[in-house]
Amino acid sequence: MSLQRCFNVRDLRSAAKRRLPAPLFHYIDGGSDDEWTLRRNTEAFDDYVLRPAVLADVANIDLRTSVLGCALDLPFFLSPTGMSKLFHHERELGAARAAAKFGTLYALSAMGTTRIEDVAAATSGPKMFQIYIFKDRALTKEFVERCKASKYDALCLTVDTPLAGNRERDRRTGMVMPPRLTLKSLASFAASPAWAWHFLRDPDFSIANVTHRVNALGKGIGLIDYINQQFDRSLGWKDVEWLRQWWDGPLVIKGVSTPEDARLARDAGATALMISNHGGRQLDGSAAPIECLQPIRDAVGRDLQLIVDGGVRRGTHILKALALGADACSVGRAYLYGLAAGGQAGVERALELLRDELLRDMALLGCTRIADVVPSKVARLPS
Picture 1 (tube, rainbow, N blue to C red):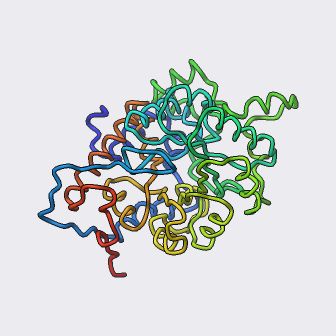
Picture 2 (cartoon, one colour; picture 1 turned 45 degrees about the vertical axis):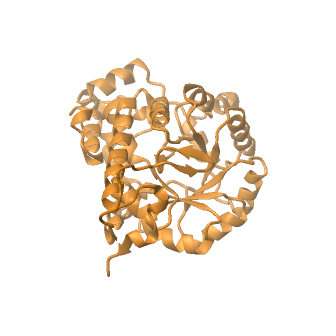
């Protein structure tokens, strides 16, 4: 399937499934436990209906907005997602260049396969780095200093991963990290010749920003083992305050879903929240981000910018989030499907589809600016 024959995110998902070995596709596509939250993230948008105004002058639609101190051409951006090289050899650089081309922000994951500095050199577009507070505080502080030196616009602290969720689909498909060519995986790799060719040509899937730490240990410890050992289950809000003292730019907390935690994040120095359940990959049974949005907005008022992260597949989803109080949305799987299907060109196709849907949906809703998408434009269906 060519990218131009992909007419929505669902089509890009189908193209990604065709191109990737099964374990890697399901690594993108899957969630934890019974995957109820994974499904709910998108289905929850159906609980809301849009309320269009007719006979409005919609000759000119302006999607520009300001998020995290950055002027963006779109009210959505690319979420931080780990190890993009798993899905396409153009990896994070392809995604970052696509985001810059469309005038929106790219978020690089601490678990990325491209260095902080290399992403900064590849594009002048707005950038955010997603970070964890590791047991090795020197590593966390090093990340902050490197982001400052590379002129990243914002820092994003992910807080919902004291340990990894139970991703049973990965076990069933035989997903291992990094990928290995084995007798079990041979058929799947052979069915994905383009991916397999690039894998054999360059099989390095290192987490690029921490490899120097592992190499310095000299104890034969594996990279994944090192990362798993670095997650600290004892973290608290005081640790957010510790991070805040080293970073004076916009600080986003990713993984908050309750008003109580939203207030604590604000008090700890956050300037924005990504309302997120990690794409349904952590606690199954947790609420969809769109369901959490209004209570959090009521709790914090305009003190924090709020970004809905999870389940966005359509322009109408973005409109519903904006009307319910979000400042922006972020997309993860939507662009990863595009990346897997066609590298940078595939990410551009994902952004193009969502942008064009949003332009059309704004006009049909009777709005010409993001500021026009107000609460009266949406209603919740009766339960």
